[in-house]
Length: 139
Image (cartoon, one colour):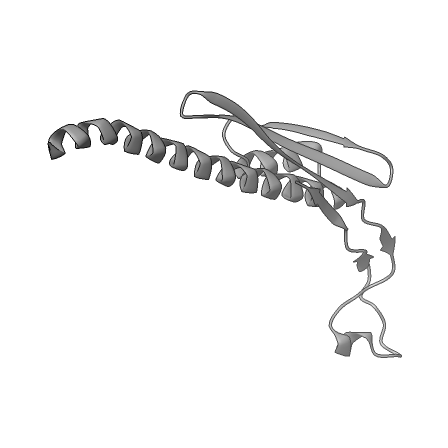
């Protein structure tokens, strides 16, 4: 009697296990999309080349993800999207968008440790100060 019940319940347990594992994988893909978008937006905000930023995003994004870059003179936006099927039944797309302000670099300004910014001390030649980028992720 127990064998017949086990034979009935086993496919349900296996199906539930496959669904749980697929759902966790979907969550991991979402986190990887967020990380990839933020990484690429930060790179572009520092005035890195588009190829470098997209390469960084590809290294952090799930396999097969699409990466879209857009921007203006003062902001850059990166969107990373990935499609995954759950248990071969339904397809889901996870995506993340990160926006960063382009950094302003002023020649002649220098920000070093606090002891190096005392009055009367000169900045090293060619030193620059970059404003931090603001990154916002919409999940």
